[in-house]
Length: 136
Image (cartoon, rainbow, N blue to C red; front, side, top):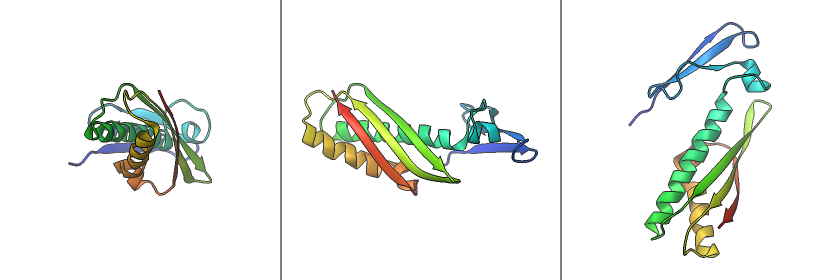
C-alpha cells in the first residue's frame, strides 16, 4: 500500500509560499511557508506533520499491542513534540496518558516501550525518541 502527498512551492524560500495536499484531501492545499516553519506564521510545516504522524502511529500501535495482550484500552492520549534545531530533527518526545483497566505497571511498561520502538513511524525516524507516560 502506498500513500501519497504533493507539495507545491512558488518563490524564494523566505518570501515564497507553498501548499501541501494529500490524496485523501485531509490536507487540501494546506498553506506552509518559511514563516510557518521557522517562526509562528499561519499554516503547517513538515515537522508538525511528523509529530502528528508519530503520535497517531504510536497510539494505534499501543492499542494494538494492548489488545493482543488481552487488555481493552480505554482512552489513550498522546502528544508528540518534534524538536527541530539547526535544520535537524533532534528528538521526538511522546507524552502519553492511558486508561487500561486491569493492567499492572510492569506489564504496561513493557507494552508501551515495545510500541515506542516498533511503531512504523518510530522505525523510520533517525532521531532520539523519548517518552513519559501516566497510567490511570
